[in-house]
Length: 357
Ligand code: PEP
Ligand code: MN
Image 1 (tube, rainbow, N blue to C red):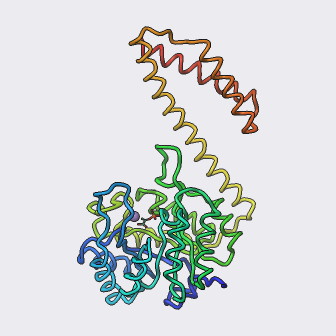
Image 2: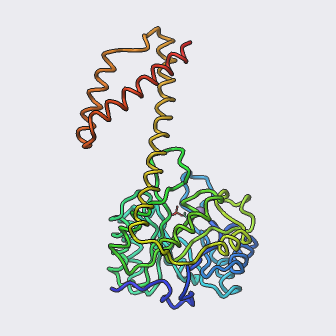
Image 3: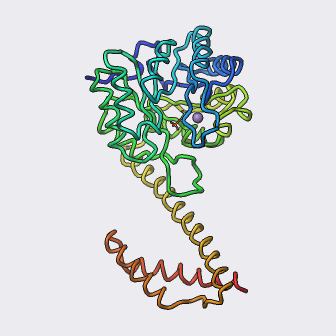
């Protein structure tokens, strides 16, 4: 089944320029929903979002209002004349959302990782002509993302778009909540050139001040739209407070975006994209070194308490042997790896000496 571009979904979406999806992370109260959605509409949104079932890390966090919230989202649709979208994670959600006039569904990042869950949603949509967006899985696996789209195509859906919301990372203190991976987006685009891709700077950034630069980057790369969490009172939001913006800030952000299609060649843009990933990797390397240093300090305290010498030659030799074996398997230059670990070891001896002084 052929995939239709988002502007051809018969939802009165603009045929030029980025499609703007905005609205609160979560539907919380009637007043909050209506004020946030009216504000988003005035700021230039074409499609209103509102989280109804929220996948939260900790049980006991606010997990969404379910059906009650849908009634308020439906009211926002009636009052603004704009179509609405919400996340669905199972067949029940699909049934309830469609019964409440939800125009576009989306599959969240925590659901895309699970082929059983995606298939169950696909099965619930067989014979429906419902538009659906698929967020990338939390882990950077382009095949899993493509697979999810194919499951939806296989049940006859044609109005399918993708959302890039960044990826989980090993590093604990990254600048971004979920760092973007523009190369992976490019791979996705090459595999499914007909699909529209929306960027979700809110979940990539995790903080308001980075939204503008990520949004501009997405536009420069020719992505088809932006999904930006917009709340009438972001600081007091029940979920994702740090990354939501007011309708006024949304308007300001949108009016500041440069719309010119990138003049640069695809080589320049690929180079820039690889470089920004190298920046993220280098930052991750340093964050790992900082985590390693914390452990070294713990070891130093333990050695001091038990009167153990700081340098243990046998342990050091065994460690270097193991690192060299690992580096061979990874195809790394042995001299480079030896040099790096000599420097790390020298530093950790110094750290241990300063702890035990
Ligand atoms: C959301 O859009 O509110 C959400 C839960 O996003 P994600 O699936 O990207 O984490
Ligand atoms: Mn959110």
